[in-house]
Image 1: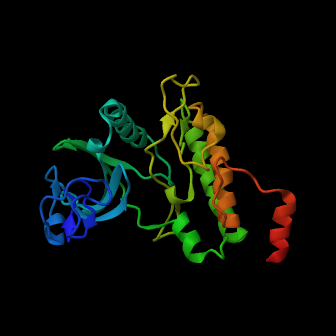
Image 2: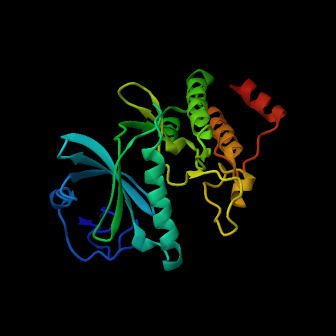
Amino acid sequence: MLYCSMCHTSNSEILKYCKNCGEPLKNKHTKAERLEKLLVDRYRVMSPLKIGAMSGVYLAKDIRLNSLCAVKELYIKLFPDDDRDLTIQNFKSEAELLANLRHPSLPRVIDYFYEEGKYYLVMDYISGCDLFTILEKDGIPWLSQEVVLPWGIEICDVLIYLHNQSPPVIYRDLKPSNIMIRKNDQKLMLVDFGLAQMFHFKPASNEKALGTQGYAPPEQYAGREEPRSDLYSLGVTLHHLLSGTPPETPFKFQSLEKLIRIFLLR
């Protein structure tokens, strides 16, 4: 097995390039060797939690405090040169943003650092399952309103907190896979603030449209999101959980007649 030195994804020995990030696979590393990686002489990487195309989140141990944490790594080499400065600034903004937020449904930022050409963010480790995985596992293909309604109320509570900051904080990527249920107490947690931003009422003309297709509202595709944009994404998210149907792009609500027909067939 070959482990990528860039994103730590495991790859077949017959591959020349990492299947996740495309980095050349030069050296063979055992799993034990990979897990011995120590960041800034403090955080020992243990296992991957969530590997994306541009960043990865890993379970790590803070050897100074003898506690578990989550380390987010930005794969800065994968971004075009023109986008790197903005990407790094957004990553720093995520750290500063979370460091100043205090809510029971938001993870805390513990640390932020740069090492060997890579940027890292250290956060609370949330042990649990995201809503997309729960839907895939327990959905038939939908989840019952008795299950979903309390989640919706908790999401509204954290959005009220974010939108009442000065200036308001727009999450910009609300979807089932970014909402977790913590294992030990079933508390809903909003994770992955990589796209969140402060709302200054006048979006920059050069700002790129960000978000997840289908969940993002029309104005977000034009880079003109506002706090109400999160409410649109909340509606799409709840619709997905309650219907078991992924959103179209852009999202469209089903007709009342169709919803009644689906309900009667249950």
